[in-house]
Image (cartoon, rainbow, N blue to C red; front, side):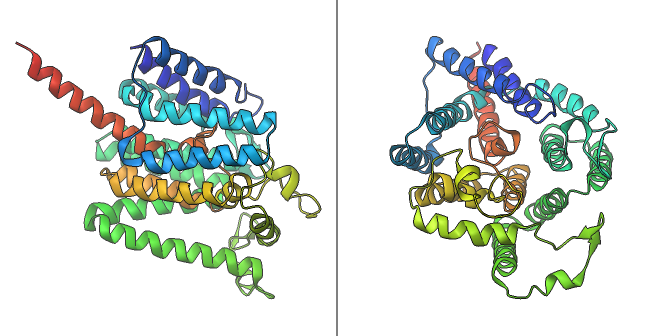
Length: 364
């Protein structure tokens, strides 16, 4: 029972970290330590998910390698949190409570209607449209995970889509569309066609970002598809950032150390940014080449082993979104968590069903 409450509190604190002027990351860090203490004192066996244990171990090894080349307190703190979150995902997500998450869902749903704007874009209590877009995608995931009534799902999808349009968040719109497309393809045609389409999406996005970064004259910008008073195809300075970041990645195979991409890689760039604004570049820049490779292996294995269309579609949607956003796997933010958490939540729900079946069989 305690594990169930801790898991729910952990998820809630990931969300509250996004609130502007809120408690920040301190509650989620505190709760994560409580989770570890609980696992130790309850003498519960701490395991890694068997299907993804190898890429997880490589991720840990890559993180430690990065630390040995760039030892400092900030980097050490990141890695301790990273390992703690790996333990939580693999062990406490087995105790997830869908009833608790239904309460979380409705509380989250209420927050998106708070009428606060950043310019002409809705931001609610989260301070900016990008953070609100992440919360909306989280709500979409919970909606499909928790409910089966098609009319209720359709109604909430319309509401979430309308609020998303008010945010003007382009990456949010792309990830919403991605989720619906892949959910439909998976349900109608199965995994093979889903993976083929995923490959097509990846080639398209990587080609777009590469073209924006290295084309001498960007013809896409001349199309001028206006959305919220700006070109929908405009890379928002990501072209300059990518061009600046890649040489740093090539020169530093073991990374710059976690938490240092904003300080080291962005200096002298002449662009008002705090990171590479691309999760994959951030992983390679901070954790090194091996860290990025291990994460890609982890996602591919999770997609291969996942069986729920909601899990597969959301993993794809989030991992496509972070081509245009920042996140660190097993990090202390909701977008970092949802890069991979849907897979472990699915595994946890399967574990509960198996446990309940064994329990029923043991009854006299």
